Amino acid sequence: MIARWTVTIEEASAHLHVRSFTVDLLED
Image 1: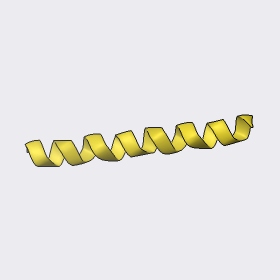
Image 2: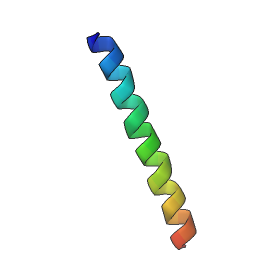
Image 3: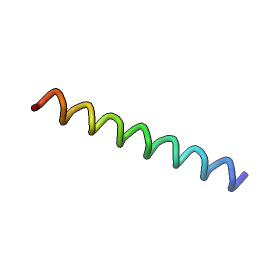
Image 4: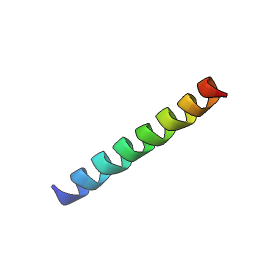
């Protein structure tokens, strides 16, 4: 269960990182 939560958190943080990176490109 804990391992599953860890994967979910990693996926969420990775998604946010990609999103912020995309926003930076759009704003540039």
